[in-house]
Length: 603
Image 1 (cartoon, rainbow, N blue to C red):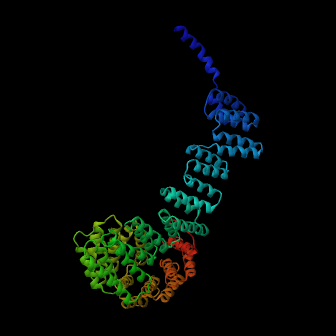
Image 2: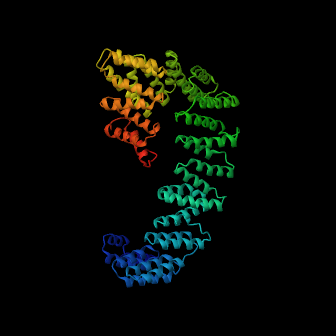
Image 3: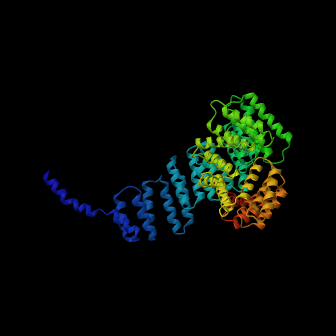
């Protein structure tokens, strides 16, 4: 035993010395010393099974142009593993290096012919061809693989990617549709790929055509109408999108959730006709037992109201008809915590459009007292009720409600809104120092709208009170703003005219014009409003109202006078000439939309 151990101890160093060092071989390979690397890898390949040393040795021989030796070892390896497809690819690549194209293609074909029903092997061979940019061979590999696996759609997603690389849009789309037929779970991924690679008009037309044919031939595959609905959604064709989703909803026996989601998207995009169709589907077809019934009915009524009021073309009769629909629904369902948001919307309709302030106040007082009412709904009702009290001249009742909401939502946007309203109320009544202090705090609000408005008010107060201890003109202007808030336009204009007469060439001159233009806009006298905004931009372009006037004017041309080109030029002027304005970003965004740019969600 001792003799054997001694012999091993003697022989072991000799054996280790004879074994090539793989780390040294790799170092030679990486530094380009290929002759040395080839010598070591040849020995390692001879002493070890596996692909690594074979492939490293072969790579050295190819780079050294020792093609005969390379062919010899590949042929030898093929004899050992005749069914291994990648060996034929190696031989084909060797022939390609020698410009033996026909011989190379023959080996590539053999590689595909030698495939077995092993998914890993199929994927590996196709990936090898794809890495060589031999997409036709990769396609043939997957097609052969589908036959061997007895499922022609098994590799459809992979085929789609190859057709994309070949810029073959019809076949790419066909393969993606085969993929979601095979596995509906691919749908989100397919949508993402199509958004990136088939967003042009021609590609979308091809997708739409293929989907229509598939839906006709295979109506039970729900992924097809879902994808078609998604396509219409990309084009903002909500009506056709609804048609597809309603079909899916009915076939699946669903609860209308998809339709409701799409209706919300249409409503946010101000396509109220489409949104009304979606909400109405849930209300009429799902009925009162649906958990979406009340919220859909509320959204339906809200869209009908916005369709009229945002269009600024409503008649008194149309408003009364909407009022009747609100009241009819509330009479049917009841006035309670569940319907509180609908009662609040009716109050808004009464106050701002039907000029029935007393009824609006009564409705909101009712909402606030509903048992178990949601705190946020209640607080929003308090803010609106505070506004209505202020319109009626009940200042202390208004500030009490604002303060209650501020206290309850101190660090929330709702609380910031309440604090802004309280600060504005103090401003109306001449307490400028306290109001400015509150506006300064609100500059840091997480709500961009509140922050921007707070900045504007703070700067406005500072500009018109900072260097002058006499604030009479400013007090008169604040009173005029309150009169406008209270819809007392005749009295407001009288107050504004008094400022101009009593204080000629005052720093408030542009503000007087701006407030008058605001009144004309509310009264839908757009030409008069534009004339005053133009005067501000031309005569007072260095004052703080100039950028606001420019934005308001652009918005009137865009949304009321239907002159998109004029609006576009005004938005451009704003973000060019007033790049520091808080409105510059929004102006640029609207300019790009009018120009036809596609904006990302983040913009």
